[in-house]
Picture 1 (cartoon, helix red, strand yellow):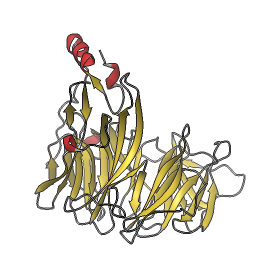
Picture 2 (cartoon, rainbow, N blue to C red):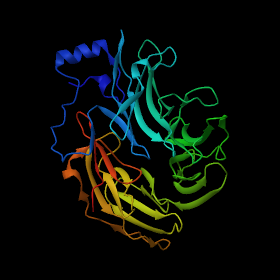
Picture 3 (cartoon, rainbow, N blue to C red):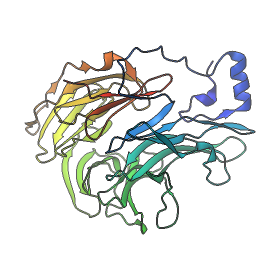
Picture 4 (cartoon, helix red, strand yellow):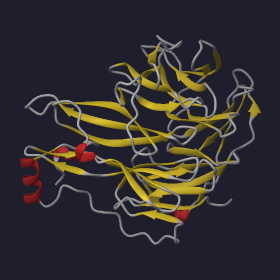
Length: 384
C-alpha cells in the first residue's frame, strides 16, 4: 500500500497516515538491489538529494533529513561541503531552518557555485501548510551561502530570494539572474535580477515570458526559449543580453520539450523538440543544425564537446546513462524536412541505473547518485 501523502515529490506525513502505513505494511518503495561498481575515486555514503562540483574540485551536497513535530513529519535537508581532501563541514542544519510561523517541508532541488567558487546558490522546493485542514502551497526559494558556511545577505537584508528558480551568478560574482513564475497556471517564467550590494533591479526583459533559460558561463548572456503568454504561438530560440535589452532571435522551433543546454565553448545549444528528438544548433550560424533520435532525458555536454551524455530518465528519476557522438551540423533549406540520425548509444558504468549525474567543471570527474541509498560516487570521466 502506498500512503497518499507519500505520492508527492515533497512528502507530508501525517501521524495517522504513518499508522495506516505501518498496519498495511510499508509506505516506501523497495530499495534498488545492490550494484557492483568499480572502485570510485570518492564516495559520500549519505542519502543525497542534490550535489554540485565546485571549480576547484570541492563538492557541495544536500542530504535528506526528516524532522518530526507533534503533528507532522517534515523534510528539512542538510547542506554540506566536502573539501578536495575529504574533510566535510555542514552549511545548514535542516532542523534549525525556519521561515515564518507556518509548518513547511523542503528538499534541495539543486546547487550552483559562483564562478569564483566563493558563493553557493541553493534552490529549495518548499511545501508550506497554510491552514489546519492540510491545504499546502508549493514554491521555490533560493538560499545564499559563502563557502565558509555563512548565509549571505542581499543589500544587508534577506539571505534568500523568494520564488526564485534556476538562479546563477553572472561573471562579476555579485549579480544574480534567476527565473520567477510569470503565469500561475502555465510553465512560463520571467527573468529577474538582483545584486548582493544593492538588491533587485529592473530586468530589461520585463514583460517577456520564457519556457527555459540557459545562462552562458563567463558571460552576461543567455540562450532562452521564449513563448507567448497564452502559449498559442511557436516557441522561439533567443540569444539575449541578461543586463541589456539586446536580443537576437535564432530560430522558430517546431516544438520544445526541455533539456536546454549550451556547449562548454558556448558555440552550440541542444534541446529536445519532442520526447524523442534532440536538436543541436550552432549559435553563430543558427541555420546549421542536426537532429538525433535518442529519447527524452537529462543531458550533459562532454568537456571536448564531441559527445553528449544522457541519463535516459527525467529529473529525479532513475535511468541508465549513455553517451552518443555529436553529429556534424549542416545548413537546413527552408521548408525541407530535417533528417534525424539514430546514433548507437554507448553505455557507461556497466549500464546500471542512476538517479543523478554531473560532470565536474574541469571535465575530469563524473559523479553519480545511486538509487535506493542514494550514495554519491565519483569516477573519472568515462572514456570514448
